[in-house]
Image 1 (tube, rainbow, N blue to C red):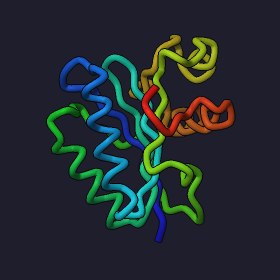
Image 2 (spheres, rainbow, N blue to C red):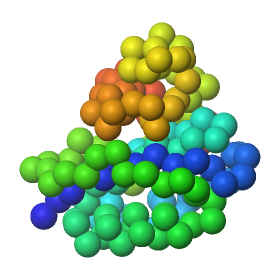
Image 3 (cartoon, rainbow, N blue to C red):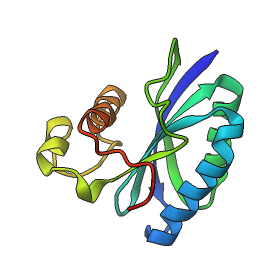
Image 4 (cartoon, one colour):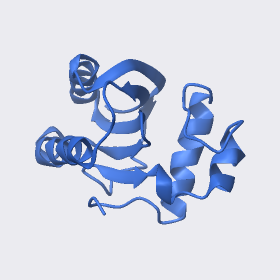
Length: 142
């Protein structure tokens, strides 16, 4: 059974390029064997990530993320059983929020900033889907 999990977290320490590279490298190295795909979106202090795959694998990976010292205040925004993947093209795609138009962020939130803690899970999912449509999800760190 396939599931999709969308979560948000606060960075435990300021996000540097090294921290982001480490997370993406680890995801791209480990996720294919688990059958997990997804997208990571980040700003200076916020992560928002979608994980798709088998229920056991996604739940185990999420539990590891909750215990990861790089993440704090981890919150589930959406968890659902799915008939097919929407984010299957990426072992772990990425979006740097600095490359997104402020008007797109205002479409889904009160301010032109990534704040999934203030959005509904549905709005966060819609934002990520729009980023895919706009071709703003990359496979490699720019």
